Length: 174
Image 1 (tube, rainbow, N blue to C red):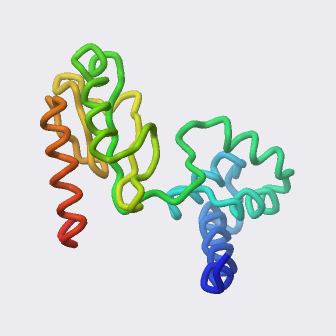
Image 2: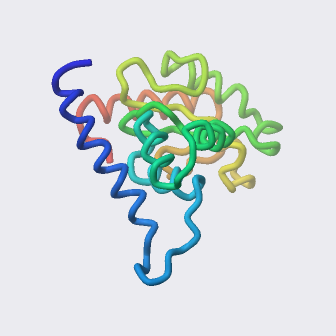
């Protein structure tokens, strides 16, 4: 761990504590705060669950680290590594699957140089599989940071990723 990483850990813990405390909306009446709601608050703020969040959530919720980890590891939407600068989702729900999502997914993975749900080697783009993006009439669908692009095919998906990589390289991505 580098010196800058060591120095940032206390700042990370403070940010985690802030996210956890943000659940308390009324000091007089404490809402129902759970391990799940606490983990969601951290992920909403940091976009992932670092190891420190497991520990801080256990303290905050008066739970064990094992209890917190069992909740965090149960839900597939929690991620435990920082995401890239932008996220690309490929829908593989039933309609998208029937309309060719597997070939779209293969093309996106090939263009990013990844084998599964992961972040590209340059750390810029995170690929996620989505069970449904809610645009079945446009199947197959891919999305960048929740902005949908429908009627994707392998060639258009490759071009989409190539254009995105170029935007990120040139610093003009949104």
